[in-house]
Image 1 (cartoon, rainbow, N blue to C red):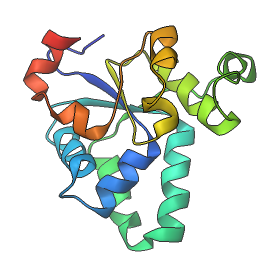
Image 2 (cartoon, one colour):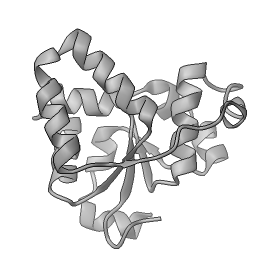
Image 3 (cartoon, rainbow, N blue to C red):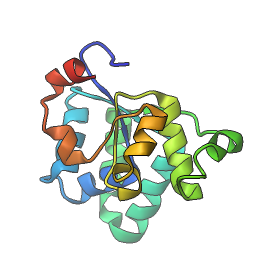
Image 4 (cartoon, helix red, strand yellow):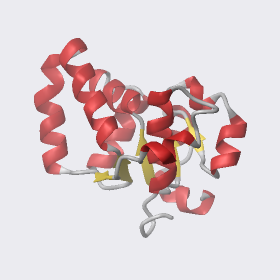
Length: 151
């Protein structure tokens, strides 16, 4: 799964927004790792749309920074899942969460980093999807160079 020694990390919209809002916190540190090229970030179009929508309503001054980041260091943008694929996870999650989760599962990252307890608080979900779901703080407990060893 990892690209060379760089872990592939699917970021949920709340991690990106939080990192732009507070660069000193764990989400901000993850964005810094991405900008430095120490991790490979994967997102879905829906995640990007959610970030833009949230920035417009809650932190419009960060929109230029987000645009610059996307143009300077573009993430891998996974394909949005089909409605049929999303249905597999609707038993466990709301429609919006199921769509993001399905995109993360399909992208086959080393980590799905999210601040959403719907994902992090459900170990059965992670096991069924064979996906390592972690919070930003959990992800940062291991330096990026060690992530390949842990994957």
